[in-house]
Length: 98
Image (cartoon, rainbow, N blue to C red; front, side, top):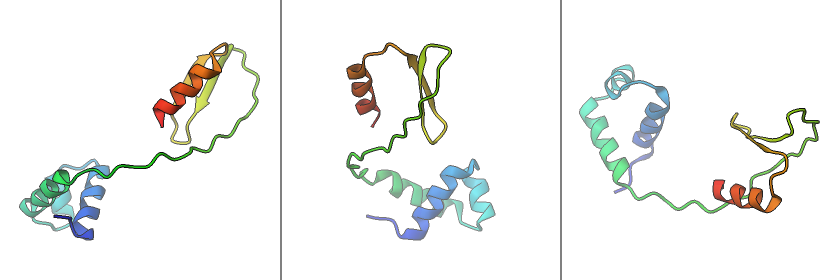
């Protein structure tokens, strides 16, 4: 049974809100038991398989004084690796992270 759009939007908004279920329901004038039921249905739905996608990469040549390779993700994650790392190994690592 799929959830209607509004309950799903409420669940996704609650998940990113940092509020407890009760506080979120109080703030949005929702019945907490109804919300808990929506959440139960939402969590019981099978997760759709996501197709692999290519991730755009921008290469910036910056001199490194530390002798390391630094990969920065747009979301703010940073991965620092030794400069002498094997390109084949790095390719395999990036495939795993996809």
